[in-house]
Length: 331
Length: 284
Image 1: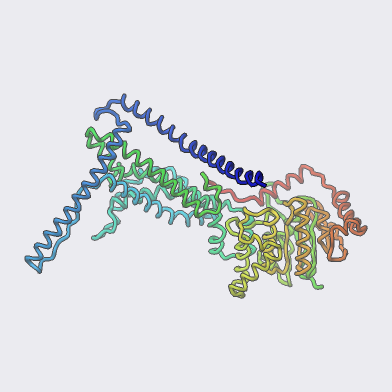
Image 2: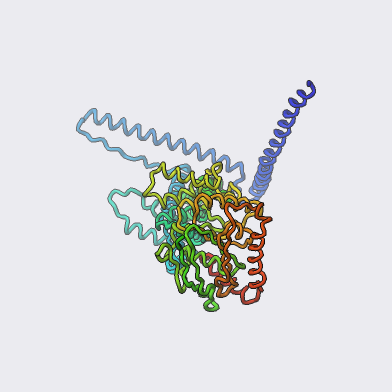
């Protein structure tokens, strides 16, 4: 009796312990290997940076970039404090004038300080997401229509094939001129610079989404289409119940492709057109040419990379939650 | 019993890059209400084409199909199809797959509660109660085919068309599914056309076996009446001399009279048909 009870109580504990050790080892490996990779990279970067001399001083190493991050953050905080102080002064002044002359209507003026690094990050993010969303709203229905109709495909496909390889930056001057000619309003809801960047992003997002959606729709298993025919599903229900879910994996492939390209294009467009955003930050720092400039640009490069990575992960996560086909969402 | 379906002198000619290909020539068949008819023949002889014409997925080049006195011009739920590869929508559960059909067919006639009951009834009929909220990738091949059958039955079709429903299953599962099908048939007494490769399956399930000649220009070769008493039991029938006789009749037709000689021309014809059935590939 005693031996059996000892055995049963001792054994699960050993198994549990073994499992815990295994899991820790696997976990440690998963964390340790990328960390080692990162350490080697930082070391190489620091060594290489140290041996490159430019007219603006040494090429920034990891340490210099960290310092610049701290500096950029301090600048951001200082700018916000200045802004708060400005509004406070304005309010006090207005209150004083109203106290003296009750009929005075106080004027509220917006703060005009220069946007900080973090403001620019936000601007770029908003621009890329709005351009991307507008493109998706246009491209998915168009892609479905092209995928469903052979005639439409034959009519539109050549046009898409010609526009697809055009760098959206080539569109930028045209977009700028058209926006300033067409978008005239005394009280504009969006800044023109925002519209320029957004339309440019949209132009580069549309093609991959249209193409992937239409291929996904055209490649639907003919048996599923036959099910729909036997059930006599009306056209709209056919799209909603069969076509859309079946092509979700391909639609997401297109969206991830285009979002990645859009982020790259946006930075270039902001540099070229001097539209607010991370691209403008990089260009301004380059023109500025202080001893901190290269470090700040390098900090921006790191942030651009991180955001691009996070955007892609975000899309992947969205795909996992939306798509039935988990295998296509694993990469 | 009255004739419910009439396949009337059908010709089927496919346009291929090598010119017209006659798949079916003068196929003529009458099917009575409540009858279970098997179509048997070598692969590539056009069995599926016959079924697709009855389903309305293909239009016959000549001749036509008449169901309940009306000509068939397009697919419809009164001619429900059980597809060979189950064709369940992979993003819906078993229940939702049947629901899609029930909503489409009975959406205006049944209340929500009635529809739910009807869906569950059909899934119960194929013994899928326990897994009705699982998706196709979570259940076995046999279970998928059961759901496919439930979906077809739920449309309350005038005629049930089955395209090699158990062809992709292993032998044991197939026997199990055949027993289930006989059980359901016993209860509902549907009119069924089933395509099969399997001689035992054909003899076990059918009231009549329609044997088709080899293509191209395939047609009905012989028709064999199966007058074995129902309900049938595969174990009892195994020793039945009548069963053995019927079985050998079919085998004789397939392997003596219509011996399949895979010549170059017929292989080519098969490939042509395949490309015709193939999915449209989009130019990317």
